[in-house]
Each structure stands twice: as structure tokens, then as C-alpha cells.
Image (tube, rainbow, N blue to C red; front, side):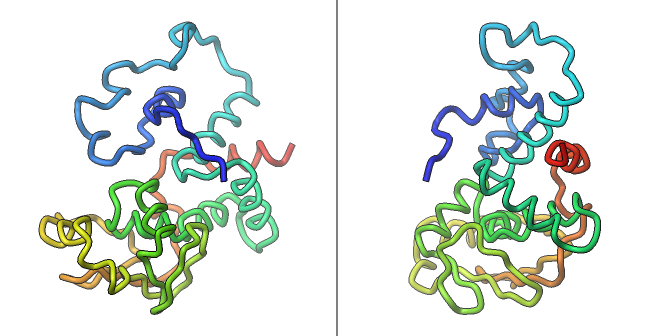
Length: 208
């Protein structure tokens, strides 16, 4: 499957906002936005005024890059949200939040979604006791997400338990203290996504 291989810091600069694609580095002075707060490329500092379509496109690209999804899967998720009852934009964000790779990131088992996707793909994560290696797997209320028993001795997870700081979990998740185990308490609400995205613009983009 194709993946973006270039510098992810260019993506933050292109969207003119922190997408937190590099974990802790994004919180330091080394962050690309802190040093060069303009779009990459030869004409990055001379961008003109965007059209309505351009604004919608940038919002869509921003969300897609935050969650690390390719266009085809991103669009498919949107169409799935369209078919459900309710406000399409809110349902769309909910589906993105309920992806297993995003859930692992929200639980603090990974420093960013790229790392979370690798952990899932390398079969280090179980859902309700069963190994799941699909990052796009949709978690549901009541699901128990845990690091596989064979993986708990990995350096990454050992260090995680030793130095894990108190993380702010969204209200729809809980974590078992002292263990690498979390649970889905409810469906995520729009305010739980904590991403700088105006979902209505994405709805307008795909509704053309």
C-alpha cells in the first residue's frame, strides 16, 4: 500500500498548523512551524488568496494527513458516514476516531498515529483478546484494547510503563492503571476528537 515517504514536517507547513505527526518533537522549538511558518516550496511565502474550493480542499487534506489515511480510504469513510442517520460531519469524525490506530494513539500506547499503525500492523495489539493487524479496524463500545502478551516485554512497552506520564484521555476511553490495557466506554463525541478541523467544510467538499 502506498504511503507518504517525504518529510512530514512539510505537511504541517503546507497546512499552516501543527498536525502533531512527530509526537513530542512537535512540542519543542525544533518544530518546523516554529522555525518556518509558511508553505514549503519556492513560492511558499507568496501564496495568494484561496478560493472557496481551495479552503475546502485544504481542510480535507488537513484531516486526511492528521489521521494518516490515503484519499481512497478517506473518501470511503466519508461515504459510510453519509449513509448513517445523523449529522454527517460529526459521524465522519467519529468513524475516524474509532479507527484502531487512532485509538492506540489516544490511549498513549504510541507517540503518534504512524507509530500506532506500525504497532497494529506488526500484531502487537489485541481487541477483546484477539490479535488485530488492521489499523482501519473500527472499535466499538465495550471493546477492550490491550498489548499482546508476547509483546509486553518489548523495550517500547517496558519504557512506556516506567515513564508514562499522566495523559489526558478523551471521555470515551479508559485505561487500566499500571497495565497496557484500555477500554472503549462510549462512542466519541465531536469535542473528543481534539483535531483542528472544520468537518462541515469537508462535507461541502465531497458534496459538490
